[in-house]
Length: 83
Image (cartoon, rainbow, N blue to C red):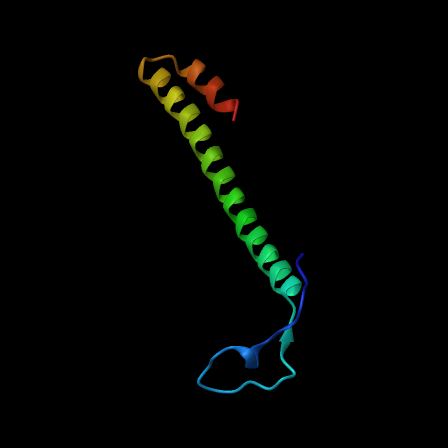
């Protein structure tokens, strides 16, 4: 059975001593780490969404460019207007 106990920073082997007032529970460390990871994940998801949107627009622009090179400017205009 897991029993939560405060982790005293003075219990760690360090070259210097930290006052006993600095106590942080395992749960607090876990929750802080989770919030940090969630914010990183949200940032990554936004970046991936931007990249996906960029490639979708690039695909449509390439299609319109190919159509315009063949001389069908009205069709190319219609394709661009779908953006």
